[in-house]
Length: 102
Image (cartoon, rainbow, N blue to C red):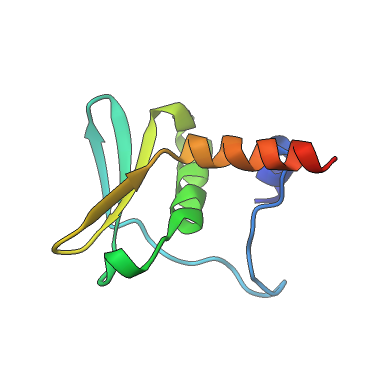
């Protein structure tokens, strides 16, 4: 994660103590329409916005697979709802904000 913070130029928000680590898992990886979809089941999808979590998954997968964020889409769902976003947009928005603060 520190590598990405330096490379991207903004702090990746993690509320972790030094001894802790980030844990979790991706529920579904799917290639669809030329994009890698990173999907996560959330029992109350309408009430949560796991955008930071899914963006971290995308950054990790991009680093491990060399698939560019441009080709990734993230989504979360439950039995009635589905939401999605492009992690690249999240990263670019954070970089833009960081640049304005300087």
